[in-house]
Length: 402
Image (cartoon, rainbow, N blue to C red):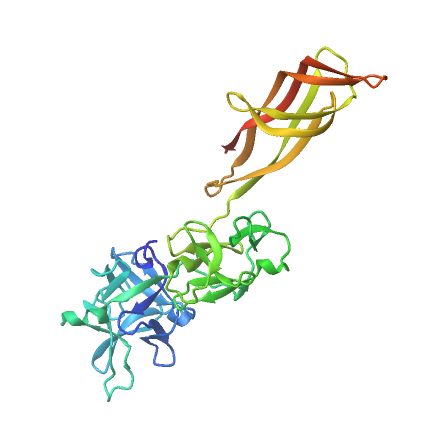
């Protein structure tokens, strides 16, 4: 994900020294200081706007009051304040708001900032001068990098907040199939999450959001009593880890519009998605009969393998054993389903169909016929006129059309 300082957008800055976030302080002469505990407040959120005249430069404004960062001199010390009403591109103007940014040589998500007019780097004041009441420890100052061991004072971590949304504490997730995400043990007693509940009052659909200081979240399944976890690319409700140290249990909620959001897992930076479940009916037919002798309606006992047509052969797919009325067609319909991952580009649609080949087979067979005469005598005859007729489908294939 590109830095908002490169593309423009909402972000926060975290100090490499004290681990706190840069904050606009209206109660302290509108100074910018590194004292925020989290990025959940508009005081700690800023927005970068790309300079129209200077490539690789930006203007930065506070999300709380839409005021731009501008250099001010306080007690013979240059500092940054959030009190400019509009961006100023002119590098010779004392109210210039243009800042240059460059990636840190240590970490890709870290950045160094410089005021374009003053050519002075942005850094955090580590301590306060006892006689200066305005510029406290943590104030954002402008100066020159004189000592290599002070590099951390000039380096900030960029927290990308563009599109990131804060979820309510108690949530249910509704999928594009109109069903709510619920906790469900499907197979092997594993803690699956599945869009299959039509009742928002279902206790298995409830989740609790735990928000971290950087705006990321962990999601707690109330039914399982555990946190969501990615492994390897499935999301399970099976983690007992109560910290945020495992990125597989940490997510970012991104606003899509229309009351919809996407969840991005920090373990692999991929987005959560539900698989499309395609349901269809499969009907099979079978009949044992005679192609010569008349036996219609006679009840008999059959024990035999049941043939079925496969791609290139006829296979014995199952076994039938029991009472059977000779010549009767037995029909069986079974509901089947399979899951597919369908990529649908924006502003487009896809039509998904399941197609199969229906095959019919006629297989001759021999059988033993026992006739009981009125005298009680049993006559056993080996017959060779049996014919099995079966219908089944095979070669199921998913077709996706625009």
